[in-house]
Image (cartoon, rainbow, N blue to C red; front, side, top):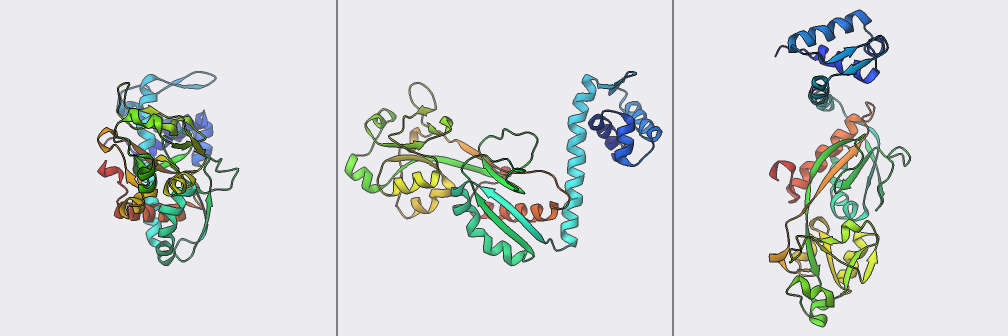
Length: 304
């Protein structure tokens, strides 16, 4: 490899700082040193990464493409260094974790005892919210989010994915009958979410496509509320495996229309702002969570 990490760091710092002098101040180097590193990098790559004018620096098309890869390399090196730091020390202090109530109850809470035994100096503070929160405003260190990510300013770590299934209780099916086709659902009580509407798109294959839009007979803002309603025989629901595994295993909920169900997996990510003071705590928690979820049959990204 011809390029050095110092040259990559100089390049990224100049882009982020908007000038060579700002990058030099950030890196505690001289402006001439940063400029020379940038020139060496362009010479080795045989491309112009930045156009220099009297007023500002502007990324070229090649510079924009190279910036994406440079960031990935620097992030990977930083992550590797952090993991080695974690191995050399005993992380301690408060760690505030936020997740939707169903995920907190069914996926996180069962792992807390094991985590505390392994990292007794970390003080967990668990918060539940069924809405997407602002991490800074809610003083949250790491949040678990299910579904596509929207906020690109956060660091995200994939934890796995989760399958959706159409379910009902045996009591409901005995009283109302078992729907055999998607078209049969129109005569049943359907349990759905108050928001967002995307959660009321069920992964069912039918004449018009692979997603069936329902109009809920009964709505709730929480997946756990919908689970309890389904268990009580209130209707048919579409929920994720992480919260219904035990129910399906003991027969409290039964999967419907398995052949017509499209295998849709919701991505699960941990999101956080990079904060050096918290890094070891976050890394320890996410490493533990990821490994335990994989053992409990929540598919790991490598298995997808």
